[in-house]
Image 1 (tube, one colour):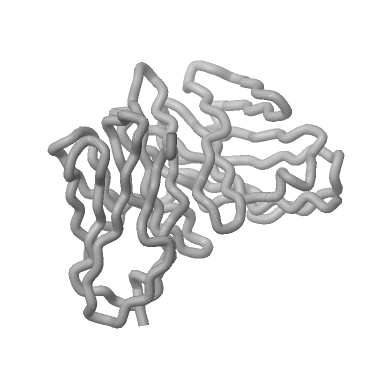
Image 2 (tube, rainbow over the protein chains, first blue to last red):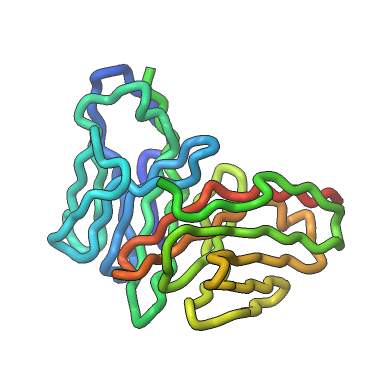
Length: 114
Length: 112
C-alpha cells in the first residue's frame, strides 16, 4: 500500500498563477484533509472532507478551493497564487472510528510563490 | 488559532537520556495525539490517549494526560539518534472527531 500520495513534490509559481495539488489515499478512509505548515506556526487546517461529496472550511481557507473527486482523491486548488501562500502543504486521511481518529500524512508539497 | 502548545520548543539531549515534552491545550477534548515529523517528511502518528485515560505506553513512549490541568506529556526513554525529529501534539475537541488541531511542535535533537 502506498498510503497517502501527493503530487507534485515541489512547485514554484509566479504571483497570480494557478495550480492544483493532488492527493490520493489507498486506505479506504472516509475523511481527508489539507494542511499548510509554516515555520513557527505548526500545521493549520485549510479544508477537510468528512466523506465523499462533502467539504468544509478549516482555519485558513481563504485563497484556496478543494474538490473531493471520489473517495480516494482530494485536490487543493490555488486560483491566483500569492507570496503568502508559500508553504509546505500536507494532505492527510483518517478513518473516524469509535473514539479514534489518527491521521495518516502524505510526504508534502513544497510551494514557493515569487 | 492553536489549540495546543508544546514546551519546550527545542530540546537537545545526549543519546541514552530521556526526553520529556509537554503540551498544554485550551478547551475540553475527546482525545490527544502525538505525532513525529522527521525533517522534510510528513507527520507520523505515534500514540493516542483518550480523555478518560491518564497514562498510555507504546514501546519507549509514555504519554500522560491531566484533563484538570489541560496538559499532556510525552516521555521518550533511552533516546536514540533516530529519535531526532519534531514532535507535535494534536487534540480532537468535544463536538467531533473529524478535525484535530495541532500545536507548534517541539524540536528534539538527540546527540550521538
